[in-house]
Length: 442
Image (cartoon, rainbow, N blue to C red):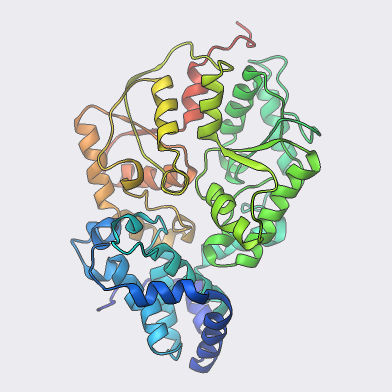
């Protein structure tokens, strides 16, 4: 297959400059022997190249059926060649592998649902990333976030004193509305530890305000951790640095264990949830999580069903739901998401396809974290999503609900690029704005 879309990236360029074919092969053979085992072998040997996965991929659909963008095409161009040549390839080929694996596959796993043999192409592409990581060939921007994880245990270079400062700032802001509100820190024995991703204290502090207001109004016994490990995000998972991924998950759970909380409630993020329920826990070798974890979708559903939160009004006007891959395909929360949405909005119009067959946002899997060099890859690679949103726009829908940070980042770019003039909401945005506020000042 022809590959004529090389994009210059300093991380990839400088990474391959240190390689030789011999070093690549030596690393590949160690990788295949020591890490991938039977799973990769089974997938590689059972794929019949039928191409039924193709139409599952937003890149393929957005590039007029170019086979080089199909899931099977991307595997053939990367891991397929590596296996066939037993890793004896030149450095330029590794550049191509890294560009495809990091920026042309979101690891969203929609293609699994279209493969008659159940092959997990996302797993194969994550193994390509893992191999590139072991060679030191990763895109510059996402590697910077991985370095931040290594140095600070959060992805945004948030300093130790900046984290509690951000929480206290939001507490102070919120007390103008809720005079008795506190953002409790390190409360031992609390029922819930609420955790967020590092971009919230850095860029979206209003989400911390809103969450604190909802938790305060509900009357539950909650806390937030102050120690490193508070960030539940995990870009190391997407660079292929599984050793760091394991350290991050261990630190996050140890925060909860030290506080002796009963549950961890994770904010509205998809990839962080995936790192806990699917990848980080497996890497750590745990049979089960040391502390129960729930996503905000489940937690909001509980608060609404139990009457701990009551809606004073509902969001007016039709909304539609964008299903995030990691909590819908990965965790099966599609019905809970629809329950919460129906409780907080007057009308819901479903986009098609939806639920586990929904088109990806094209930002997840660390793709948006690969930064400006690859922004247009995301935009052009998700024309199919823009067309889907346009159909909703034509039905009078101007508001999209999606409980995932990456989905917001990807959809915001698509809405802007395709001139759709739609707005995005988190569940917490609407719950906070429309709930009964019995503890607020008049």
